[in-house]
Length: 270
Image 1 (spheres, rainbow, N blue to C red):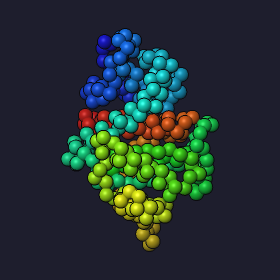
Image 2: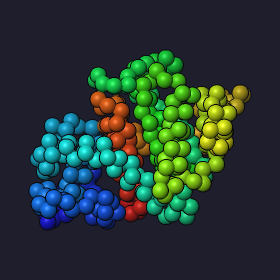
Image 3: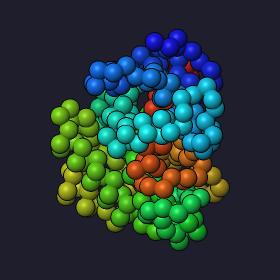
Image 4: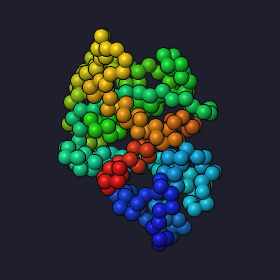
């Protein structure tokens, strides 16, 4: 085994690696791997944080082709989403909360795309060409789910997509991860789906409005939490713009940024 070292600030500490090592089992084919899994994960996290191209990975990491192949294998298998869900429970328990949230916040963020690819459009309200990241976070701001779609999709329609996916996970998950969910907060863009959410999912979708007499910037209850999460995600340069060709890659990059932050929270390194 290669000695576990930290070369870049983005690299995992050994205590952080131990939290997710179980998700990367030994090679089932019986042949020893040429590269340690923690090296592959460190290379992927380097790309997410710095925003560099895969081909420009520093020489201290495995060849970029190897890193890229593992990245896509794990993205298609849903591994990063699984790790994110486990870490959410661990962080919540560390904060003295129940492992499963009873409330969440829904919002979207329009981001420009730098290249071609699927699901691209224009957000007519913000005049942003690209895609939308629709996320659901708990009351600590931890990412529960992300769905990426064209920026031309209205918030109400996109909100239905993400909540349907969240409900499907609840219904079909062995662990029933979000079974305590009762209320979801959102802004006025989701007002049209309040009754839809109640009838189909049994959740209360509460609209948080800005006071009519408010002047200038004002922190709104619950909504500031999801805005803070977007701010956290924006520190990862790969998310500053949407450089990905597919929505699967876009969603994966969001989960990776969330995972990296939660690993620091669990090990008290943030």
